[in-house]
Length: 298
Image (cartoon, rainbow, N blue to C red; front, top):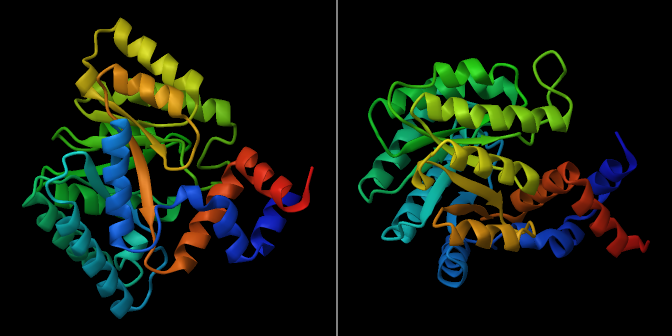
């Protein structure tokens, strides 16, 4: 573990909140809704709103999380520029697959009534198989359900080929979880090359890629390739995280008449936001460096 990671792990939550708050919309459902409205009204940017809650174990806490998501659906209805992300570890997978799938179905059903899209986030490799099983089962019933795949995993090409016969919205990203060398690429450049490759593979299989990256050369590489091959601008979109400074290229994408969607997390309990922020800082050396400089000077 490097020095930055050690310092971030020891950093009090209050300091993480102070220096990394741009990553999080705020506390409560209303903060996520307000941020989604602001981004669309001011910048023409779409959002996928997410409740920060991972590793939820007690059934009463899982049920409370489901209720928050159901409130989110009601609060975001009538906003075609907003979607919602959900996670297995916040919806009961630690109890059983059947329980988790039932909770997901409740949320997807509520969202379907309003034409709202739900994305099932992908967590670490230990959850890949069960996440894909649950996704496919619910996707058989509903058209407003998408999935996330990670370019770092060796298995992802085969997962795309076996994904679903129905066209799906698929967020393709490098992935935030550090995985061992026997199951995943270790070099970021290789992960980015695979992400580029998988965008075309998703299109070849009839899916809608949601290209999730902050790497501007990679974004431009994708745009050039897709334009050259005549891929319609409404056949894919780009996604980024709230708080990452990429205003210029985001506005370029908007002016192209395409969707740029930001991942907009909020918290009901600040401890979940702190966990998320520390993970993001640890995965982003530049941001971590800025925080540490602010704390200790150059």
